[in-house]
Image (tube, rainbow, N blue to C red; front, side):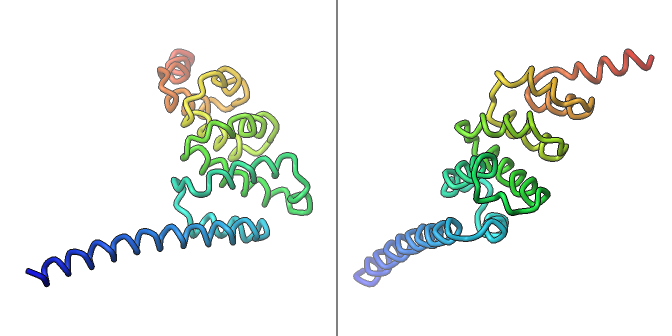
Length: 168
């Protein structure tokens, strides 16, 4: 009986330490992420953290703001910045981070990069921010992007219906 109680206690304590160890590991990676240069930040976000991990939400939101208005990213290639912004926007959309919606919309409005536009529109749709819907549809000149956005946002397939009518 004593062995059974002892084994239950040891199991309970080992589970508790394993959980706290995971938290410590995430905090260590987060500190490394904050101190890393942007190329390393992108790699760490890609490989270490799950896209739905809330530990990085504040960092991702602040970093997206910095890529728009900060001086830290001015020396980097524009294609790298756009790729990094796409990664951040995708992750913020998965996290439903509504406090970043203005920055995401600003990128959507100002970028000529179609992949970045699409990621921004999808992130805003995941955040269920209906106030941006009309502006997004105007900004998306591609009929397929409009159709995808409308369907993913819960609207009817009106673009496809209009295309069928035009071709018949």
